[in-house]
Amino acid sequence: MKIDVIIETGPDKRFEAVIDSEKEYGLPFGLLGEGNSVQECIEDFYESAAEMKALYTAEGKEFPDDWEFTFKYDAASFLAHYSDMLSLSGLEKITGINQRQLSHYLNGVKKPRPETIKKIETAIHRFANELSQVNFV
Image (cartoon, rainbow, N blue to C red; front, side):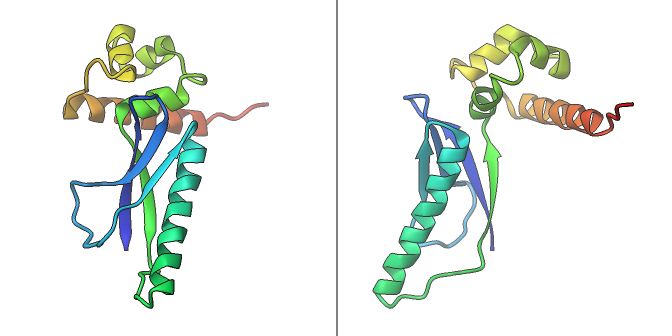
């Protein structure tokens, strides 16, 4: 079963990973991961899943083993995670969205519209594709 997991930044600026609440997976429980980095957050999420499996096993309940998690970022968590690698100035050049607006998204002052999210995602994918074509001599 493919399950989308959203990586968000919490009020304390830590990262959180939660199962996408907009989709119905039929799970009788939730899973949560938290951490100071995206990697810690994802590891904690997997630990949460392992703990839930152990609980179900101990109680003699059937637990699904065919999970495939896909981790997705909200705009704020993406910007926070990559802020030490991609400056807002650089992201402005890549996405065409001004730094001030990106800063608002990063700090949770504003939430981007779906069209803006798509614009950012498309620009990032285009940039990544461009980088993947780089060859040195």
